[in-house]
Length: 192
Image 1: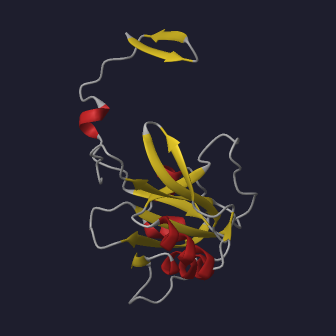
Image 2: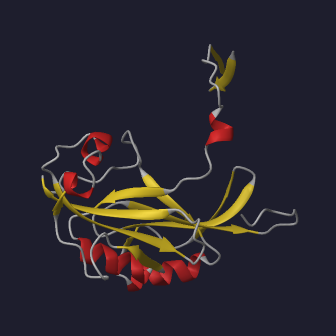
Image 3: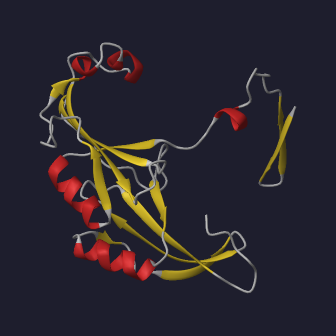
């Protein structure tokens, strides 16, 4: 039986037993998919923040042309829950040199076209993507140089028993990006 307390109310529920608990099965977050309206503009924006392309799903580093999702692998449309005739362009980008770092999977849908409005902070689903940075002021300068609309300058807050310098900005499609620098206090804090 799992127990959880939310707003002073204790919640209990029976959780099914699995042969391999997820805490032992999950290794890390491999990639985060961001649907974009303009793949080149988004690639330039994230490159200005320090990301580099590690896979363009094209040939020889040439930006990929829109292809049917089913052409990449016949199972892919079923896995993603999309029509096999859907067409998209995609690249993977990595921040830093660690080959195990989480990747950004930028996809520009051609058929159907990428559309809709970006999520806002109180909407269900992923509301923002947070990057832990060593220098919030430097990240802010890079975001501004890349043309990001910043919601504030880096501000220092105390949250969750730690002190952070943090700001949010919008990417070219309006996705909310958060940049958080953990400030060392008298206590030893993890750098990871």
